[in-house]
Image 1: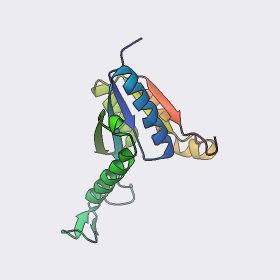
Image 2: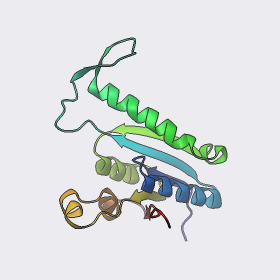
Image 3: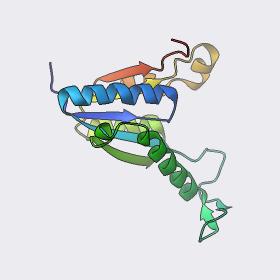
Image 4: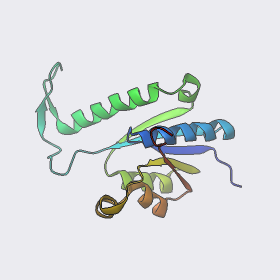
Length: 157
């Protein structure tokens, strides 16, 4: 069995991401591995990234949409990770990247020394899966290292 010393955990702040990070923390503790938690943010394609928006309560009231999206992602990352136990948070390095989630995750698994990716899957089926595809499925097919997908527990389970 290969040694696991570095684990990448892509998150989207969903319940399945919560389940994935809990599983990744479990592995990190067992293997004494480091965890890198990744959130890939993107401005929707129908919004121009150079669009300037008004931000209430800011020193500079006008900001580019990309700055607003990145600041929001930072806030969500902090809130998401704050729910983890302090000992788990000590193992974590955070990374926020703008771009397409699949492209960013695949590039990182090829270019950096990750031994494992642990990520959530929403378990979408039918037409929405056919039309939208699955980030997790595309990562499993193209990653440069093993990928463990974790589904959020169903409510009431």
